[in-house]
Image (cartoon, rainbow, N blue to C red; front, side):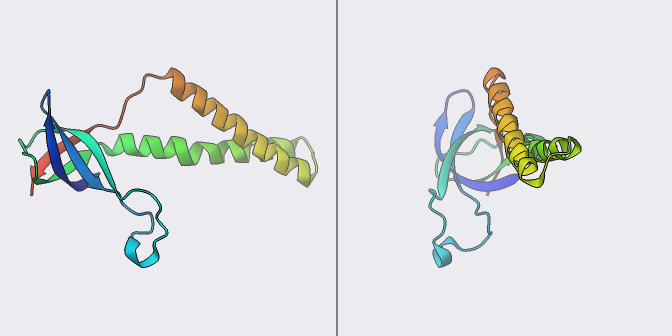
Length: 134
C-alpha cells in the first residue's frame, strides 16, 4: 500500500517523520460534507530509504499483509464470532430472541478474546518505508 506524505523531520537510525493526510472512508471531499470529525493529518515514522530531507514530498509504502492482517482482526473476526454465536444457538434449538442474544454474546466473547490475545502478543506496529522523493 502506498501513500504520499511530507517529511517533517529526520530521526536517528535512518528514520524520518512523515506527515500523511488521512484517507477518508467515503473517498470524497471532506469540505463538502464535514462529517469527518477526526484530524485529517497524522504523523508516522518511516525508514528513510530515499534519503529524503525535511519539506520534501515523498511516497511511503507499507506491507499490504500487515494492513490486511489488522483489517482481518478488527472487521472480520468479530463478524465470525457473531455468526458462530447465532449458529450455535440455532443448532441448540433456541428461539429467535435467544439466538440473537447468543450472537451478541458471541460477539462480546470474540472481542474479549481478541483484546486479550493482542495484549499478550508482542506489539509490532505497521512499518513504513520512504521509497521515492516526489
